[in-house]
Length: 443
Image (tube, rainbow, N blue to C red):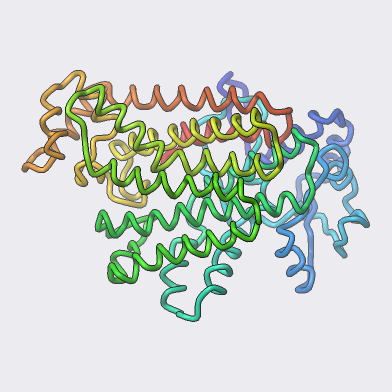
């Protein structure tokens, strides 16, 4: 596989090899990379693979994979294609793959910005591999009602982007590297925060389906279309309760306070979405605050929680929070833009959905500057016949989509700047790549 960089040069080799090459370059072990690659060849026996029996599988599930010291263990493992380190306690290595592919896959960006691409989903494979299995186990263990478990687990099928847990674990491991504290126990606690972030997100989707009366989500019938409103609402509450119990077991008041803010913001954001403002400036400020509370707060506070639990100072915690806030705002801005330009098949849900729900998102608010006739439509929430179609047309005739993308890119650039304040590591580089994934995503 070859990918074309923005400089026009072709970067050859698989994404996994590019990651390996970067790691070796970063830690001054170029010769190690040459050894690893030259010994691999191009056939099916080109890399390493962990083969574990059922007992070891349970061990891996418990510790969610291996944590390597990037400066030593990772490169030592690459150079030794026949045996594993005694400290890793795995019985056998073969020469096929370094590890099995994760059940979570990345959305390919339209084009990489940096020369050497780090794939966040690959470097976090150990943390994400059994992620949805663990969520389903938590939900199943908390109830004796099979139907409740079925509804609550419905969106944890591994088909989502898993953006929130991925970014949470990237920040966690970048901070751990920055603090020179990469213990298994700390990573395990931070992974609970990542689980919490995805569970709260999915619970909000379940509740949104009830509020919006959605019939389709993630390319399949929504929970709202399959079960009655009361069942679905209670299933969303159940997900939140299990997530809250999990966090309570961390026994950290500071982390609990930070994560509780997510739930407060989500509810307030939903209430804000029910209303609108008279003047154009008030509407845009209202929209940005609502977007932060409904989308960005979850990412920002989850990332901050990983810093708090690592006992990072206030400056590092603020970097984590602001990075998450900017990524969250950019993600929603792109989402609002895609609602006007992507097909139903790409998005996995109907397009122009926001207009049909009476919502004026960034593209509409920007379009109001050129077409003031949109203002009364916004105030009546596109409720009159022809409003949705006319608003859709005017947004495309204006520069609303370009302005929305420009604002999203500004937030991504700020996120990159914030990530660069942490010590350089594969995870810090991964945080910068996330900005590429967000701004270039197609769904």
